Length: 550
Image 1 (tube, one colour):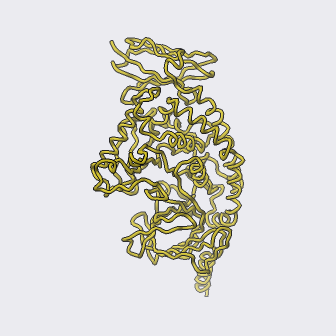
Image 2 (cartoon, one colour):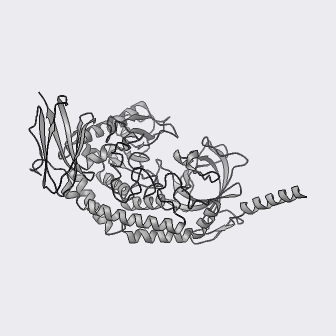
Image 3 (cartoon, helix red, strand yellow):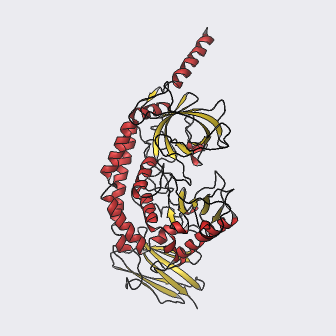
């Protein structure tokens, strides 16, 4: 009798839990694995039913699905599916979905999901360590408003094999496509002329996941000699010809060499004609607005279309913001103050496996970049990039998510528990959302104080700023660096050689003086050319060239 009671209790409990989701104001995505187990790779064939009666409607699992499709499903992500990422017994992994014509998976097919444009590849984001479910969605919204390519997002309730899995964010996977990254198709046989020049989708990221052809940048960054891995995302590994690989690698090598070596004050510097300047400005402002801890160094996408279609290097689409907006306990990620692009420029940060490319620090010595960034920031702050408008967006979203997130956190009781790499451990959803709002408000205010100075802080040539110079030059035993200061405070001096290797770094107290002047001994310097850079609060204020010779 006791045994029967236990079995009966277990069955009733399992049935009750499996049926805990019967209706939802969110679309319901139901996956039937047909007895198979979802793994990292390969995708397994599944039957997917979508219950989506449209915005504002109530969806019922007992009703007829609005869409039934075959699809391949797998776990996705790198860190986000690692064991350390989850609390024991509370595992909620992200998924990748590819829609198929049948169970064999030989042919994929484009299909619209939840009123988003038709495509075959989709991502189910678990938002595990962002319990507000806002950071990825909000950052994508802001990025698209800025004019960058991004991923449209929709919230869904997920059911797998009749078991409720919680709230997920359905996102468009980054890929070449009409509604994703609309660059020209490039076939393996197109190896000459205009066809060879595009389109290419590239990224700086971890190399885990799908194989890609890649190379190391020729330049390190910050305190570290580590170099970024530049990967070709499209054309795919098995479709990229050697000629195409060599073309895009040479293009990037040329861009980086010019950006590294050429004077930013020279309008003929090659990199200026190779890049889509507004996209670089918008990408920088987005990553700084949300203080994306992994910004610039991971999940960083950029693309190039054919020369006949513009052909310039453009930043985007934007991706991966779950530990942005104060949600990280490393690299000062929790602080509303400080630059994201310089966060690794500490002795501790220099040991990180991934480093921010030198691009951004160098672009901040270019008056065209700085002036456009300053004006763009001011324009956005007058329209959609205000605390009030962002808070209204958060409030309206949280109102829709009220019941779904209540269910989600009944299944995953995560509040009050430390999740990697959270800084703030909220006791409730309300307090977590309020903390996020306060962080955003403080962040925008701090950036106002910095970006409003950009036109003053732009590095100038001697004709633009006669008070700023390196003399004597060439020099033998010592050199004097002199720079006009727009504000008091410490000044950091850095010297790098033509290979990008840091030779010297020191911080000096600027005090209240208007002119910074420091003599530097060259006894340990080999003959050759060097860059001397001065910064205040992480912002470049002067850059000069030094020639050391006997």
